[in-house]
Image (cartoon, rainbow, N blue to C red):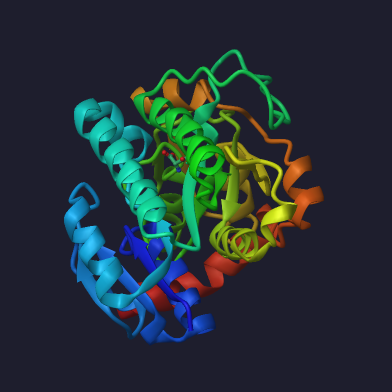
Length: 316
Ligand code: AKB
């Protein structure tokens, strides 16, 4: 069985993706790595401490486990990146370049790397932002994603590295917490609603952003990684879309089930980041190249989270 290694496995996406890959391909075949200690969410299976800026350690682990596929998720997200631009550049860029170089030198089969809607800036079409349009981000996170996309395309073109990528919207799940993103409010809001607290939102009530339920994000990632290489026409990163909503709309979807839930708005520096991003995304290429189709809309997602989050909170 082909061995898989995941970097940033303890993060919001990493935790759920690791669990699903272990479920699909066998626990022993998926090596989870992170700088944090492993969490229960990852399930059984090998875990190694790895700082992705340490290329030698990455190489040793690839050899030790005979890894052929890498999901490279370790990165600083948008809001945290604005607070530490040097670390953001170093971690997001050096980490990716280390993985791409190791993939080239060790002839790895396939690499996954996440890009983001953060590649777009204020001059991109705001609604249904197309795959190909100006990518002039105003955040350091966005700059690392634009550069990263170009590195992926370069390593594919020049060295034949089969690197695949998605421009994730904000990811929303109940099993693990996000850290340092601009879209994190859309996870916190469910925790506050279940705790009976009023939610203080750091974005304006009408600030629409593209979002996706975590199970759809995991599905999209695994689907993309299983598509025959010849079907992939985008070697920078695919637009993928699922839901688009404002804080007021997500609050209303919660109030339909918890009528007493209250929200107030106290926008901070993250509003500027959100305002520079698209409201919604056009993902025609992903739909036509590899049949991408999300399963969850806002109503279905809220119902699923409010049903399952209480058990997760109880166990914690
Ligand atoms: C963030 O908010 O930084 C991320 C993203 C949209 O890439 N969730």
